[in-house]
Image 1: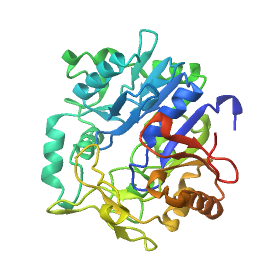
Image 2: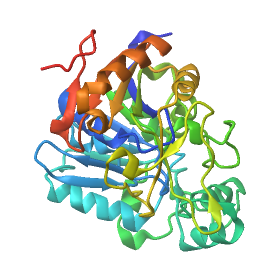
Image 3: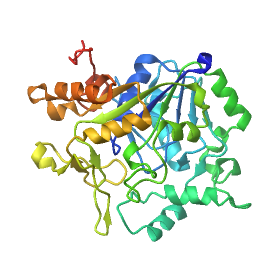
Image 4: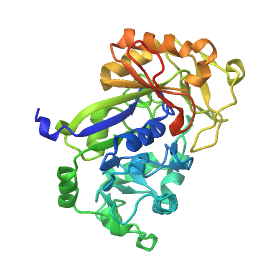
Length: 351
């Protein structure tokens, strides 16, 4: 492998999603100062970050790495599905917070998919029995894959130009040039490994795989650019809540569903739907399977504040490292930049 090209650090979720990818992405961007950040988000996932200034952002399109002090380029990959209205809202908020100045280039891959209202409507009509976010991601992807000669949903086809986003759409050559010129890239995956469409949880999954290999493809990034994978996990994994006519799926055999009351925690709600999340005990089987397929170099363990009593999170860090052979290098003890802690080799909180 050509080490000259190894410049992409990728964040992937090792569970069912909502492990704090947005939190660690923002933290790494602020502290490691990547010059390029890239994502292939779809509207069925939202990433939250409270920066070092206390400013809260929730992104469904932009990567949370826009907070990097050395930022030069923001890239939205070919596998992304995005709402132009949402994109412009996120850009406006970012600029209010002091990010995305004139020196930062925003690039949308020409093959990224534009979300239309009829996509969500089609999804609501076709999915039954499964607790989906019903944002239209799957229907938008199916529309793209049908390859219509007229009315294509890809960004290069134009569309809602009045929203101002069309000026960000680049050519295939410009996309390649931006990747080659980048020096340090932070790539943010979305959702979670166990939600991947090719896992044993099918059909109670999302509409694509959630592995580094899939994200590289959906971000339009060559595989030999990958340098490091940061896996994210949480002390008590969650799944989205069930609906009246839909089940969000089972769990691993070595875990069981619990409740927010049993944990003594305020119930969490999903960023996208607002439904109360289902919560489960930690699964060793899950973390080992995800480690096998995602091959992270290090792990961020989040929601350690749910285990602060007696510092039980330290035991879990050591357990994860023993079972996977992968070090837990960061821990999260709250929702903000200041709540990230580093972990020393003996699994003690860093200074």
